[in-house]
Length: 139
Image (cartoon, rainbow, N blue to C red; front, side, top):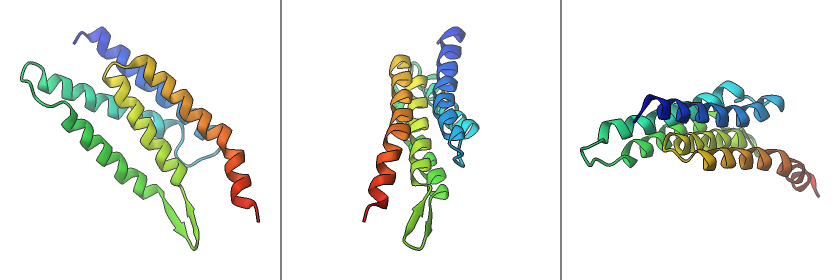
């Protein structure tokens, strides 16, 4: 893989993580700009690493990706808190999980798809929030 292609994929992961993180930071959520950007970039780096390691050997590139999913799951689990009957941090945890998946997309070279998916995550978080609040508060 050329250095130019590597840089484009990493920068796309930065952009997608930034897009998601900006929305979270704007809405004063605990995991914002840096967290989502780093989750996306880290995932892209692991995907690219799997391509480098398995190049020419016929190895399975999905093995590292599977471990990324597990690692991000542990991070997400640390964000979710139960307070009595209320659960807090679930959307934040899932958003980080999405940032990671989108970073994997970017690292694998699916750049348009990564950007599209990041826009969808932001739309879901912004557009569905009022509906979610209304449904939670109805009697």
